Amino acid sequence: MSAGESAGRLSIGWAGRDVTPDRPVMLRGQFSMRISQFVRDPLTVTALALDSGGESCVMVSVDHVTVPGAYLSGVRAKLAELAPDLVPEKVFISATHTHTGPQMLSPDSPDVSIAWEDPGPDVMSPQEYADLLIGHTAECVAEAWRGRKPGALAWGLGYAVVGRNRRQVKSDGTAVMYGDTSTADFSHIEGTEDHSVQFLFTYDAGGDLTGMLVNLACPSQVTESHSFVSADFWHEARCELRRRHGDRLFVLPQCSAAGDQSPHVMFDKRAEARMLRLKGRFDKDADLRLGERIEIAARIADAADDVLPAASRDIRGAAELAHVVRTIELPRRRVTEADVREARKQIALYTKRLEGELADRPPRDRERSFCVGRRAWYSLVPKRYELQKTQPTYPMELHVVRVGDIVFATNPFELFLDFGIRMKARSRALQTFVVQLAGPGSYLPSARAVAGKSYGSEPASNVVGPEAGDLVVEETLKDIAALFPE
Image (cartoon, rainbow, N blue to C red; front, side):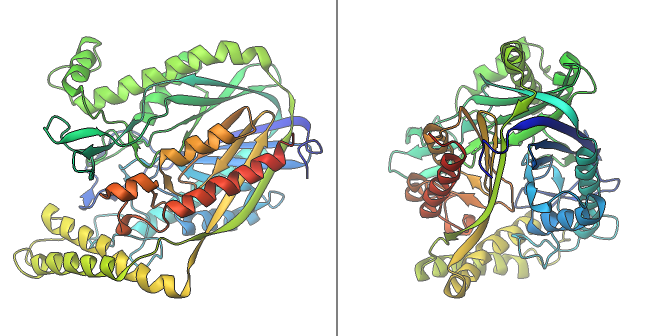
């Protein structure tokens, strides 16, 4: 169906669910095992359903680190019963990448990268949480779909400093994720940053604002190493947006290409902390990171307040809607015999520690679980070496959705920003909402990151490499061009 054929009156539906676990869970996002000690703020799943001219799309955002394949397929299977008139493939789910959400991958899952030891019966199992999340997500999508009503949309572009490139390059050309930039061998920050914020606003038939989709290039991981359940800065952002625009406002966050980005500053750290104190974001006895979350929320809300009045001058009750879904085959990152030898050296070192000095420590012990995590991470390399012999390509589900003058384009990776900027720069759409982590994750690094090495660009970090990133860009732009004919 062409974009012209899909024009029509808009129907819009929203729904949300609280998906916070009611028991302690293993938290995903670090190498060591963390068991949640308490719930700091709720985890949510939010769905936006769009229907126009016989075409449809349901966008879903979840406070989780990734979207495992079993989660997506489980939701789609349940939708066959809950919403039989909705084509399941028209639903995509993306993650905010909070590092304080539950593990939901069982040890035997094909998507699991770290299978920690059993922490004990007092902890909710990954499968228990997966069942909970699949059920609530499917119900949320079905409610949004069934609740579609005539409405209108507006869109706009703003700016907020949230994401920052987190890779520094040393004077010898090697790269490091994070690290001390005050040392004499610091050369430069490896890549650029993208402070743009893409907004999509929804309205009911009476012209009242009902929801806000917010797309920016930064994962939600300010308090990433803590041991509480939390949505990270998106919790404060949702609260602040609702404080300003009504407590019934739906907020759907999306993470744009941000594999080399984070909310952490790489320099000017003391000056940043001083300004947060002077602004009253936190006091001397509080957690600096929580103050950073409040600051980020204010920046996002300020950007929305800047964009919304202007965008509301161009509210559209009818718009072209076209949704292309297809699977593309990407070349796997080539793992060499040298890569395998180095990985096996690391595996042997961690095994020696686990079977020696750490043998009697419990599974929850930080040092023991860190060694379990690192060994599992390096174990991916020989597995991928064997896999590439029989499966040289990696299948990626690609969604490209035209909504009026704008477009959404998904990928399952922690996609380095170079690729996202290339998509935006060459896209025919007025605004391009790149949506990463609409799948099980794994970093997709740029060529310069692979040259610099370090975490995020080493063989253990990547299912696919820069060549695959180039293909993702070209195939995405191909679909965008087809939806926006000159």
